[in-house]
Amino acid sequence: GNADIECDTVVLGAGPGGYTAAFRAADLGQKVVLIERYADLGGVCLNVGCIPSKALLHAAKVITEAEEMAHFGVKMSAPEIDIDALRGWKESIIKKLTGGLTGLSKARKVQVVSGKGEFSSANTIVVQTAEGPKVVAFKNAIIAAGSSVAKIPGFPYDDPRLIDSTGALQLSQIPKTLLVIGGGIIGLEMACVYDALGSKVTVVEFADGLIPAADRDLVKPLQKRIEKRYAAIYLKTKVTKLEALPEGLRATFEGADGNTTAPTEPQLFDMVLVAVGRRPNGKEFAAEKAGVIVNDRGYIPADKQQRTNVAHIFAIGDVCGEPMLAHKATNEAKVAAEVIGGHKVAFDAMTIPSVAYTDPEIAWMGLTELEAKAKGIPYEKANFPWAASGRALAMGRDDGMTKLLWDPKTKRIIGAGIVGVNAGELLAETVLAMEMGADLEDLALTIHAHPTLSETPMFAAEMGLGTITDLF
Ligand code: FAD
Image 1 (cartoon, protein in one colour):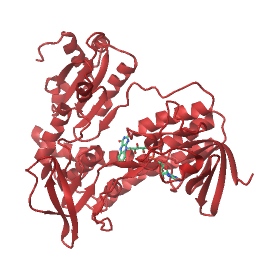
Image 2 (cartoon, protein in one colour):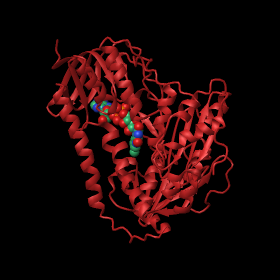
Image 3 (cartoon, rainbow, N blue to C red):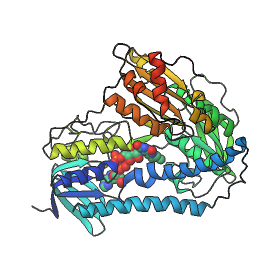
Image 4 (cartoon, rainbow, N blue to C red):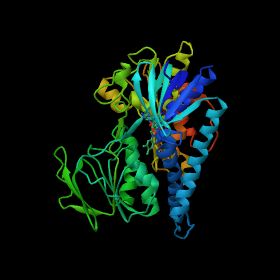
């Protein structure tokens, strides 16, 4: 035909979903083309998401830990922050990972085509490359085009003092005062970074609590800690106006949903970060020309084999639905590539874990109490407070809790929530427990090394069985 490039499988977008799908398809013997509009592979996650945020959060953690050593009688002098060096270190991590992906693509003979791609039919995508448009003809396609930050209409986006998560991760400066609009995971992670670097942080959230999807008892220790450290946290409040003045960005607040405690006077900030969610990119590559359905929110619906309404076109990751998480994207990617490779597989995870890498971290999986109550699902639970963990006390961080939810009849684990240092790492055992159908005894009778925070799910299970009653 008239195609410049022909392949078995084309993958649109090289984020964690796209590169994983491309590599798996190549490993299964397919001739694969990977289309990416940016020069660097890795998508949001590697370039402006998971990885740079965790690099900066690590620096934040070291800074606050050093500060808090004073409680144990070890005084460290105030840190001297070389922002250019810190940025450079973060960039070097991204370079290592994205460069690694380029190497892995070459090793698998995945052909990377750089430029924005758009469907021109159900079997062709046109890519606007540096050398002009190129037509890629394919037998199968995997759409992995991801998502973009949501904006608030009417805000002065031309002003460099108004930033989104990408701008926050660029670390162009450390503002004296920072307003974070949106008390979800991304907003609070960035708040944590800038607080540690020395900014006075204010958080404003429209809902009646921070991280609305998580159980309230998990959020409480985080809220308590940041209420002490930050300038203010306004819940049930929205910013109705943001004006760019020479002396700063002026925010006007309004109480939402009957709240009368929102600030009545406008406030000035050196920088404002908008973190109010992400939008799928489904409407940006002419999916309709391939006959692929995009819903009005911009998602491309897919079935359990990641197939769209068009049988040879698949969708994975942020563009095909929530939760917008990298580990969901990579899992779906393998399913799509394997289905194309003729394997009988489907996306069948019992749970997709969620983690806020704040300080303390908040992590949960399976059923939450919020969800159980809303849906009338019966459950029993145990909360193990970290004030009874020797290791947490030895770290000076007993502001944690490990909660297990189980089925009252079978005693199988159906949910878990952990708040505290390293909660994200600790959660993994409970995810495996749920996938394996483990019950309280499985956790309680497994020997966990002492003294570790990893004992805390075991202790919660013992509380559930009644074999621990007194915590001290
Ligand atoms: P993306 O990573 O969005 O990749 C899509 C790619 O497609 C992009 O590279 C884009 O340029 C390309 N593309 C789109 N349209 C076209 C086109 N028409 N032509 C060519 N190329 C195109 N998730 C976690 O699990 N853990 C975390 O800790 C975490 N932290 C985050 C922190 C921040 C600040 C942000 C913003 C997100 C974070 N996420 C995290 C979410 C995570 O980044 C996403 O869920 C993940 O990147 C989704 O992967 P994806 O492959 O679906 O899409």
